[in-house]
Amino acid sequence: MDMAAILLSLKLALWTLVLILPFGIWVAHRLQKAGKSKSWIEAGLALPLVLPPTVLGYYLLVGLGGKSFLGIPLVFSFTGILIASLIVNLPFAIQPIQRAFEAINPEIIEAAQVSGLSNWQIFRLIELPLAWRGITSAAVLTFAHTLGEFGVILMVGGAIPGETKTVSIAIYDKVQSFDTAGAGLLSLILLGTSLIAIAISYGVFGRQASRNQERGS
Amino acid sequence: MLKIKLSQVTPNPLQLSLECAPGELHALVGPSGSGKTTALRTIAGLNNANTGSIECNGELWFEANEINGLTTSLSPAERSCGFLFQQYALFPHLSALENVCIALYNSVAGIAERQAQAKQWLNRMGIGELAHRMPNQLSGGQQQRVALARALARSPKILLLDEPFSAVDAPTRQGLYKTLAELRKDFNIPILLVTHDLREADLLADRITVIDQGVGLQTAPPQVLFQRPRNSRVAELVGINNKFKGVFTAGKLTWEGCNQVFEVIDKGKIPPNTPVAWVIPADGLSLHNKSSQTSIEGYVEQISTLGQIAVIQLLLNNARHTLTWEASVAEVMRLELEVGKNTHVQIDGSKIHIMPLRPINDPRRFIS
Image 1 (spheres, rainbow over the protein chains, first blue to last red):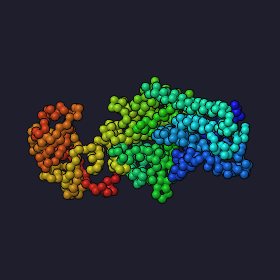
Image 2: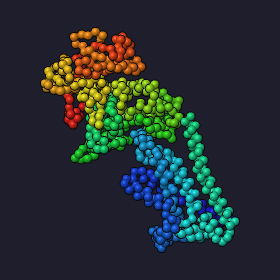
Image 3: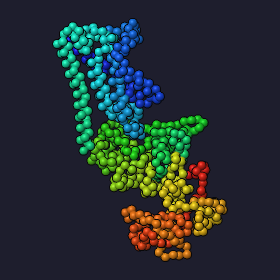
Image 4: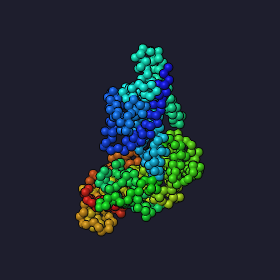
């Protein structure tokens, strides 16, 4: 079993989650007040959903190659695939949180304003707790999607063991070298991890829904 | 003292000027879309008007004019308004106690102290035992009491009530009226109530401002408003059914379409031969079985019974004018009124109120 690939995938998924969630919350919150430019920003953020991974990977390869925008080459490195993962996951991280913020009744926010809360206090005490389901959903989707990401990672990172060779790339490599047993095992692990992540998310929501029903009775 | 002067054309027209003294309950009444809620939201700082000013206890909350634009606009948090929303707007993820605590967040230090004060407020509203329930575990009336506790917990300088009783059932509404009446005694602050229910405004308010299309048409105590509406539109909005036309000359009103003349009290402001609209309030009408020199014969066209109240529609023989008369069912039985039967109507001239017929674009109709 390719433990290095499994650990690398987990490391990538966790780093992606840690970096993208605060950014996703900030962007989703700001988008509520975006004016005429909102549709264009939303379209830009949704692009990774519709672009073929090879197209996105190509642009990232060009953008991160040479000295890149950070002044150092980022392709074929963990930092490179992390940046690629962050970009690919933007719609998965932002859209559920944005929908959750939009679902908050504007009167609730106004009630908080007339109750004397500052904008930051309203965000922290009212909006964030009310958008919690959307944030959880975004976290689960981002985590599961990062574990399974293949095309863009391969284009930007190649398959350097311990550095850029994630589980999905390891599965591809094993299939190419006719190691079907190894590929099957890794696929099973990926399937199980994704299933558990989504089940946890549904479990949280399920408990919340049943609690709400109890409260309503 | 709350002093408001607001003016704007777009997005919603608003032309309103009013004052509300501490302890006064002032109702803003008008049909749906008349701008009542816009006015209330502007006072709370949730909207801004194009021009005007809002002053509370000498402190300027909002000021804007055509020359300098917006010069002062305090945020809703800085204005210290208690605001009661029609649909309560409780924070759904917080318990009743925590909802009230939120209003104390910046004024009271320490969670324990905030909770103690919030509990006192809930006790005062009679729902102390429900402190740990979530909003969706409370009835409409209980939710409105939590919302009222939250609105008052900040010790606001004014209390704004946006149709607060329209979403609750009648018995709950009666309970909330009682609570509001008790609170008025304890809080010496201006209270503005937005409602489309005239009976509610009549019951609760010291003064009423009638609003139509964003324009404040008249401000007066309820009795004055119902008996002496400023113009024909106000009469219509306050639900005066018996509104007619006539010509007024030196204390005499000639009813349009017939020779009926009434002696009417006036202040000498109306020029001779002025076409006027006139109204007669319910207490200026009486029905009799026998005719008199001044009575008018009428034919009972329709009787509608609503509980213990009967609404009788009469077709008068003078010029086929239709008159509506409200009475108790017992009174209808005493007079032996039946559809198709004739009766005699007495109109008390001293109760007649006349109003100039002004075109809708006459700026004077906006003066309140």
